[in-house]
Length: 119
Image 1 (spheres, one colour):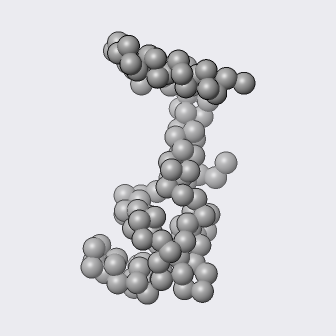
Image 2 (cartoon, one colour):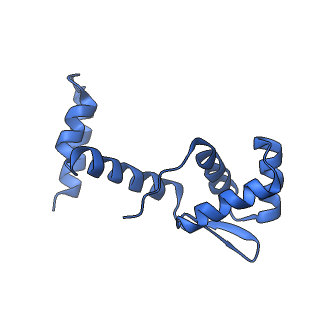
C-alpha cells in the first residue's frame, strides 16, 4: 500500500481539488494565489507531487482525483492501524476508547458494523 501522508498545506490543497473538481489547472492556480498566497510554481510543484503519489491527475490542463476524499482517508486510517497496532482493530479500539465507557448507542452501532462486515 502506498503511503499517502500529506503535509498540512498539501491537505488543504487536496481539499480544494476535491471540492471543485474537475478544475482547470489555471483556475486552480488562481484559487491557490487567492486562498493560500501561493505562486504559480508552488501550485504546480505541489500538484505534481500529489499526482506522483497517485491521488490526483492533471490531463489536458484539467485536474481530477484518482482517489476520492473518503477513499483517501480510509487508506490513511488503515495504514495508521497497520503501522501503529500491527493491523489489530481490537487493539486500536481499545486504545481509542481509552478506558471510557461506550454508550448503549455506540455499542449497538459497533455490533451492527461487526455483523455487517463479518466474513
